[in-house]
Image (cartoon, rainbow, N blue to C red; front, side):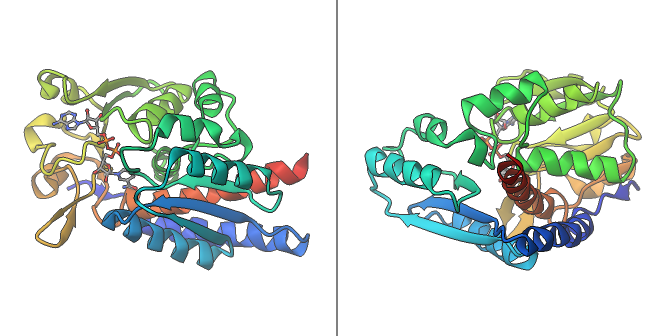
Length: 282
Ligand code: NAD
């Protein structure tokens, strides 16, 4: 049975340190302000917003939620982003995903000032990420690297296989892991025969959102398995990995819940603080 990578415990530990950093900022008259734009009434978005707000409050970060109606126009969304960009009190801006169909997400993301882009989703910040000179990191990827680092799991020279190529998880994680000298493969829905790749992984990350996608036969003995997926089955939160059968083959494995989820939220707050400090150091 692999050792459990306890994301919740690490998130709590990092929160305590972050709270101290925020307290120092506040002593200097700097109050980090994080603005989240939520469009419509997506149920899981509301749940994510609640857990972000809880963690922000615990750390001492003020989080403002801008709730826009389901049928808000692109023009009104861009106007709000412009207003937040120009407001000196605002340190971080993010758009909660998903957004309704009438919204051109890429255009909206590109409108966010890179210096306030907590999610690292503006074209400029994505470019910096791949060039290796970024000042902000996408929260989930940051959380995964923090977890591996805490348990002293080296990336250099390792075969990493990531299932999922989204711009919020798979792609930025690949960029950050390459930077740490891992050999990275990205698999996706059109990849044929996942198993031929996953079986060679020293570190396997699944971020597909498909229950029981990763089975014991797909995992090499002694591999590290990171489960990013979040799905609901009969009111229970589960990941992508068939945990009970996969865990005995691994050296380390994340649980769901209590793995990457809490670290993602905590890492997001770390990015707000990073951007706040960067802005005030200028
Ligand atoms: P997405 O839908 O944007 O991307 C999913 C990716 O998985 C796609 O690239 C798709 O090609 C790939 N995929 C789907 N089914 C596959 C299959 N059968 N075989 C191979 N590849 C497949 O989703 P996302 O936003 O990247 O999120 C992925 C999952 O991670 C979701 O369950 C989401 O809820 C979860 N998530 C969790 C956290 C966290 O903090 N734990 C953060 C972000 C996302």
